[in-house]
Image 1 (cartoon, each protein chain N blue to C red):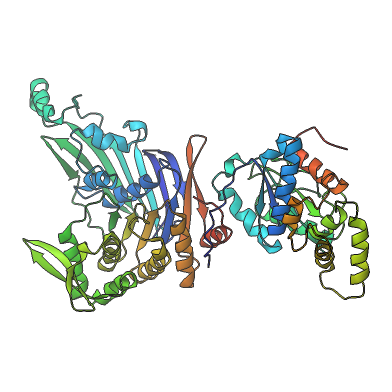
Image 2: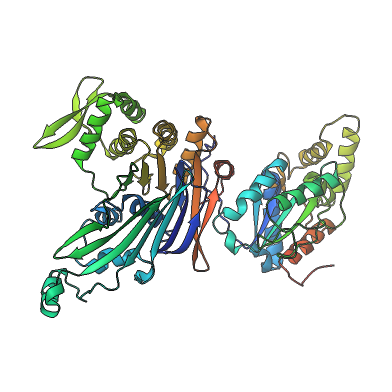
Length: 357
Length: 229
């Protein structure tokens, strides 16, 4: 479980450290203060080996199409878009620290053009033997004694990730969830199949029944090679789950991610979206129980006081005092400062009707 | 479990007055409006109810983490002295001390930020006063005792004499409350009112000396030279 995070030179974070991250962590603060960036930093740290990590970062922000220039895709990650400074993300997990460093390779030639499609032609004209060298970000990753070096390379109309030596396959998994993230139905079906085989389907059904007590069972259907989850309700009617509303689908996605991928970190942007305020306490009561059972962690941003109050009430109902934490980010004198609330502090604050966001 | 559906309270002013309970909160809000009418400087204060005596410590613990706290310049506390003034003084000082605030040395003596060598973490001035005296001299008692000492109206004293004559034959656990609310019930203007409502209805003389003491303390909190004698 991540308990401490340090970010340097990533978007709005020049130098930022936060301790006190808990199994369920809610993050709040005014617009533009860095809530989503905090989640993105964990996505980049843990998922840096995925060739589509930048596509995930993009879609997390609602940019559904990859930028057509590398500057627009990669450079905004760096604070003030200054790639000369190293971007560093370090997270402490079970007494070990994972560190990811990213920096532009200054020796690789970059042609200054706004149109990605022109890069090849310009390189060919000016640097014939080296037309394939376009833009390169070098990275290093450390986890305990393990070291990994590589680069992200953009050239010849494609992006690749290259490693100095074959990388170790990490067992860690991180999954971003936001209104903008497009959920792949086949991934959902694959995870569903995984939990069916491992006998954990009932866990998922019990979770969904808290929001919709009419759900009796779930199954998958393949249509044109795409898997869809169907519900059998208490009248034995069969319905596609995706037609049953945003709330139940979001609850399915979050819960299934954890049940199918124990020990993962789920990053949720604006967690309250899609849920009626009356469900917040039940939602967090479920998440408290599910994260404990699956050894997963949830970091979620929120603007909603009802969501925060629901988190306190839901976790309190479970009799838990250590699983919930709250972080309010605030800009003070040009720096982003985290204000940490333990569950006890947060409970007192909402019981006293204090504004904490 | 929190079920109340009122809007969360924001920190809106640079000088905070933390008080004990709803009655004190409403009383102080009415008092501030009275003071503001004479001097707009008092519009820089915000009254916040920290709840019961035992809740002051956790309230101060959470306070610096709240949004808006970086604009706060002073935090002062006002609560009942109850039956043991020294215990009340110690309790307030401990609450400040344990939460990293500068610790005032005595009632109605502001402690400036950075002047407490043990507690320099939180850059705000601090201070406190106790009901009923509201100033540097202290005595046992409560907000109700203050209210009884500053009743307005020509007949207030004579009514209170009748109240006291009636109640003296009874053994009461909270005589200050009995006296005040019996007084209210013997008037047409304030019958069945709570303290805040009675304050709004001008039951109290806000020019009385304990209020002047408190006003001077607030001016010191705001670091203002204009004080009444």
